[in-house]
Amino acid sequence: MVTLSGFVGSQAQAEHAVEVAGKVEGVKSVSDKLHVKDEDKQSVKSYAGDTATTSELKAKLLADDIVPSRNVKVETTEGVVQLSGEVKSQAQSDRAESIAKAIDGVKSVKNDLVVKP
Image (cartoon, rainbow, N blue to C red; front, side, top):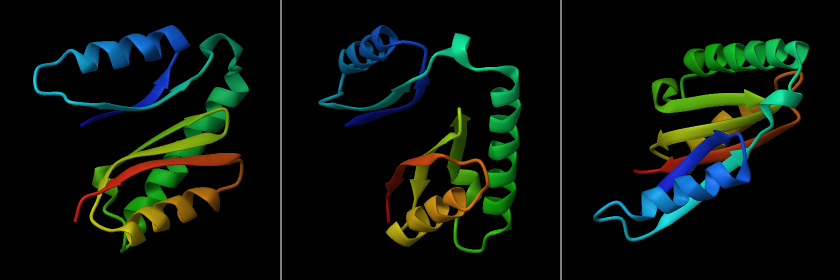
């Protein structure tokens, strides 16, 4: 199984990515966790806020003793934080999500972390 996650500019891009991934030799299924965002609608203020949110979250994850921060990718778009990557336990996944939700300006968290013990 292949998991696609992240932000794309259109639904067509998401569908194309899933189609291409599905054609790769050895891939039996594709889990689509892609999120569509509209780059044109994101203001400079929103972009700056998203960058600050991502930076703050990365710093907090780095300082945390539970979450392996180097395995967690963080993206923020219009206040929506997406967590992706691999962690070793559900507790680590839950902790990363909880840290993200506690940051000012975060509207929601899409937790796409994969638990691989």
